Amino acid sequence: MPIYYVDGEFIDSDKAVVSVKDMIVLRGFGVFDFLRTYNRRPFYLKEHIERLKNSAEYIGLELNKSVDEICKITQETIDKNPELSECNIRIVFSGGISPDGVTPAGNGKLMVMVTPKHENPESWYVNGAKVITTDVERYIPESKSTNYLNAVVAQQTAKKQGAIEAIYIDRDNRVLEGTTTNFFGIKDGKVITSNKDMLPGITRSVILKLIKEKYTVELRDIKRSEIKDFDEIFISASNKEIIPVIEVNDLKIGKEKPGVITLDIMQDFADYTKRYGENK
Image (cartoon, rainbow, N blue to C red):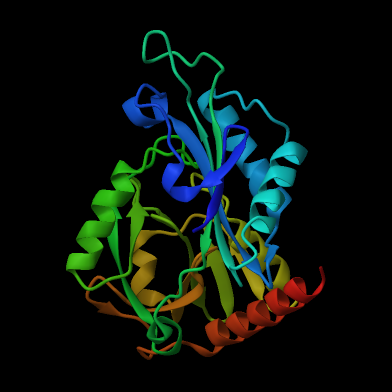
């Protein structure tokens, strides 16, 4: 049974609880971050915790621990789960209990949940996957808050349509991001991705560093109308890495199979994460 960290204690996962009066329960008010390990080494741990801190600041939630303290607690939680060869790590900071149920009182709870890494279907990576678009704009998109109503509804719609992800389109017809992913389009050898009004993905940032010397990168708004013209599309996330997209809604992309550039980026990322895990 996994061991979690909850508000100063390491406890069995089935005993991990939070008060029903906490604002994370009553209002969906809290922040979280998610990462995974490679060879049990947490991938870009400090960057994820710094993003957690930024997420909290965006919504006016005060963390009661420093970035370094949370990093240390996270590593200790991983170490207390030696039976897991690879881990998914979810770090949550709740809004805490509020006297009026609305105003934060600075008593939020830190939780670190370490679980076995979930394996996605191999077909996603070998054959490519379908995504849909949905007309949604996240409130304060730079914050990875626990208010995921839009994502939950969008994912249900995606599943009904045989898709693995839903991509948000705003009122200006800009392609922003997925419910849990970042979006990349490739046209004439150029790799294009949004650079504002979305969550700055850690996996996305690593990809951009890896490819900057090999491909021309454009950080800019992407219009909905551009989707049909892309030669290749892929999405990225900590729990998905890089997944080729071969269909958007009912529109076939490129040659309806993972493209050459996408496959090359996937290989570069796989090589990098292997080295990362070995360099403990």
